Length: 107
Length: 118
Image (cartoon, rainbow over all chains, first blue to last red; front, side):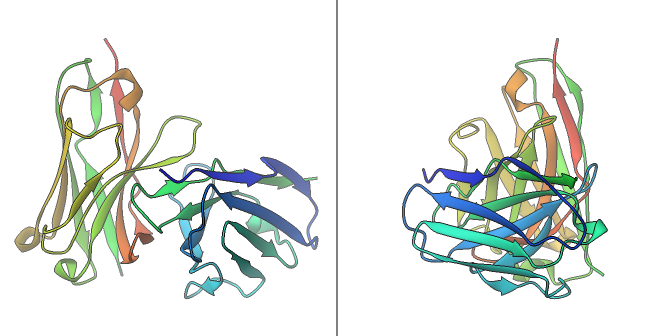
């Protein structure tokens, strides 16, 4: 199975900050990487897939990059509604696996 | 509007069975693969199982293989998860998710809670 790690596990940031979250796979996943946002008590929401492809309706302040085993999610200017937990997920092979999550909270 | 509504969760004793259902609407159900993803209380996300549009391809996480069975009824726009030999570690919120493409989940239900405890 492909193991996914994320860093940091949590971060505190202010509105307007640029935030970067890193995701690493235990083997190359050929950009088969998705990012989800989850708010407390809510289902996850797809933000990006194919490492950098923005899902319809997702604000352009979210972007993704990376290749091979290392990927990043960047929020260019953090907004109040962005405080949430973010998960990466590989879909290169089954079982599909998620990272442990990065919680973004208010500084 | 895409809607996924899970049902069937509840409190069950270890070793017993439970069947989850997911009612889908707002899209052409038999065009898409569907999945179950679970989240233990306060924990992260774990893919459980997936099924192709025509049930021709099915996959399971190792943690549930041999105990859980995924199925779908395209005539009823419904997805199911038969869970047997339940264990305490199966306690989680179970989400039904629609596949956008090859393992990417673009719509999720609100989840149904399964608690395995004596």
